[in-house]
Length: 517
Image (tube, rainbow, N blue to C red):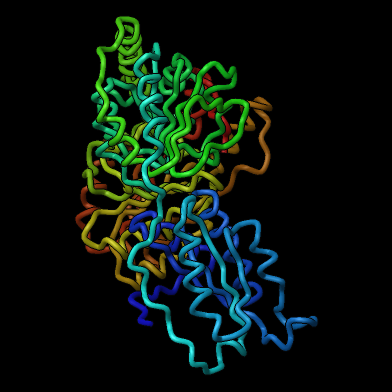
């Protein structure tokens, strides 16, 4: 077996984050390894992230010799028991001849829908033995997805959609995994269907498309949620409850669901499925497109026009003419929309900036948005960006991260320097855990606790790792700084001082995110 690429990370958690991002970018399982004991436990957050965000990751951990498994021993923990809740399968390989089959099974389970992490424990004596076992030959055909759904059900679902008063498409992470963007775009255009997406459904359909109404989960009175609340039928394509519960958009249970995914629908009182089509998403939509499309009703056309006008009005609210000097998160994302190319891979951490990036950043391609959304784990963005630049060195990569997430993970700047990677790291800097601050302000008024801190001098941090560093305090500076950072042959740390009150002000107008995390 040949190792094509080996990356030493500074922390096992970040190794798992790297492997997670590798899968999202390539569609092939990422691999991470650790020693026994504390090395293994450090993997847990990264594997839990992959578990809830449906990323195929294969984790290998060491263990004491099999002769010592039955007794107390230095660094010995029951790792398979610890890993069981955050993996699809975990197994202790206690004979060397079992390794080929165990590895084959691990990769197959990891890639099968819904994909996720698996774990193999390798005791020290097993790994030091010689055996006659040979690696199994590669599989010639690996059905990651089932074939397209039942044709009879597809026809009934299609007719049901055509008869609906105001159907709307909800794009989830499964559509991104299936790379169904092209056929889904044709589907919504042919049927004149408005579209909303989850955070991990961003980019499946270009977000500046006239039928795209935005992202669910940012603000409760935002255009995407208002639009879906007007619908009578929701066509859920690759939708996953780990991203956003159905109660957020169907708490009154008035909307019926056409479920299109590679796996069966979740059972939930707020997710009443009228038709369930289980199979390859792209093939299912292709089969649907074979049926005759009727002219949308007058009422449906009128409602579509209403939400299109609503979308325009909301964009004006997010980017109002403002003469204040404070640099707002929306200013940052507006600058990114003007500078980033369609090929840019963007990693996003967890915190207040994640709301703004997910709500306002315009993506036009699939597999370009790396975000932790099921577990919502801080510290994901930097190792994800390292993975992106390592795998696709010819593509522009941008890491966006809050100051809280950055101080949890900036040890990986040594990895960036060692690998000679060059990409901008944009820090939303407000000297606090902004999202927790906002939630406390909403709940307790002026009283906050445990949210404020004083950051180190990030320019000195950049200097210590032999990286470029720029501090931005004015909105007019940001675009030029970004352009220079993308052109640089070094990674550039961009410390953007942002207004800590802006999210709270928008929530007062548009309602709180659900949930705030």
